[in-house]
Image (cartoon, rainbow, N blue to C red; front, side, top):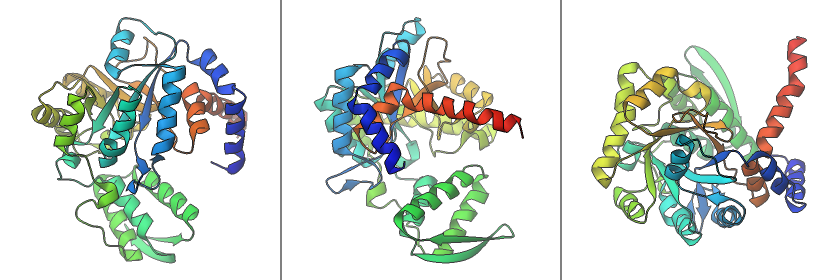
Length: 346
């Protein structure tokens, strides 16, 4: 986000704009927040939400919203109930700093949360491909390289940090649309071109929680949900593999924690990342509810296996307050409407 836009958000936060939006937009919507990475005290990922910002966000939530567990929210939605300003907190993937950094903050503010974990990642069998991708772009030297992939020559240049992050996001977004083999070939080609050796196991900033840590969190009342075994884009997974990913992760968690798993999170979670067949497989697996990353709040009419979430942004408290209030969704709708005449006009 540009400095100008961030300054405008901070001004809106100071003058109470997001509190007004909260009352206008969220009174009849149940909001599920999605977090991923955190940073602080030499732990976590540098691009994760600073743990102090996360603490400020949790204090803000408990002061201005009704914060409940995902189970409470889904039970209420199932009964046709939406109480004003209801919010649930979720954290995806299962990184180590969730246990060391985020969980203590959640406990301090009495915030229940659901942790969606990648089964094989926690078991030490897997380093998720999205993290391997990030590792390559973080460690690539400043250089301009050419590489071949599937018969085509590509040119990629790494410069300052901002360019590096932008390039990584662009190529990652493109890779999500590829078949697994083609995607892995592309990453290998980029890594070779820049001379980056990808470790076999995830290094420090990429480590997962352990089952022992998850058992400790479950004993404290936190919910643990399934996020597949290997974090594939499920719309690109063969039908016979769906059961392995969707049922298998649930079986791993229930075996290790001895607790039933009610909730599922679709990897990546955009509309194009899962299909009707995927949703049917989640239903057959017996999940009570499933969450996407399709932006928005939820009402009783929202399908329980396609619940929407609001992805929490890491910049600062003003950015967070704007996203939870519905500001980002309103801005996106205005932008789409502004562009629609130009699209229709060709």
